[in-house]
Image (cartoon, rainbow, N blue to C red; front, side):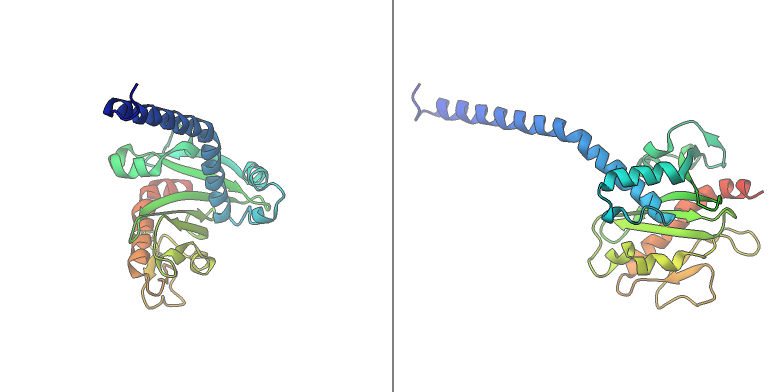
Length: 241
């Protein structure tokens, strides 16, 4: 075949594309399980962080094994509830909150709950949340005391918020003030937690400081908490009876 012909050039290019596609496809298959495992470990780590567990993972000889062991030790139960607060069948860990919140009617949403049994025997309830920041999705986990009202811990993260501004939602200084805040007021009305620009009042049990310069992300996080946690209102009230 004439190597200078158009036919040769076309065939050569086609063969190279097929080879490249085969290599990429094989790589994707080989890497799929490790990638899925990494996602699973990250999710378990985030759940643990919301209840102040698994914090020494970076110092562990085997980080993944450490997180797996901590998760197995402390997360003793998990289940799914509906908007009425009743348990439904399914695996809480595999629920896609993006799918539930974005594509389903409120009455059809499946809401994951993770229970953490602390060293003193008390139970903490971990609820996942997901919303929108300035540039993309934000998400996290809120852990509640067994009064189903007081926040025990919070863990947030983001996909692409502005470094030094909205991206600070994943920093300890922003997450720590959520501890001790209340979801319900004195009358039992669900009010969630506000993220206040300029600073929350020290005695306000329903507000924390917003991030300076990150107002849109802060307000997105506030909306995320209110919209997501309100879905659990019936569950929280039923558990506290």
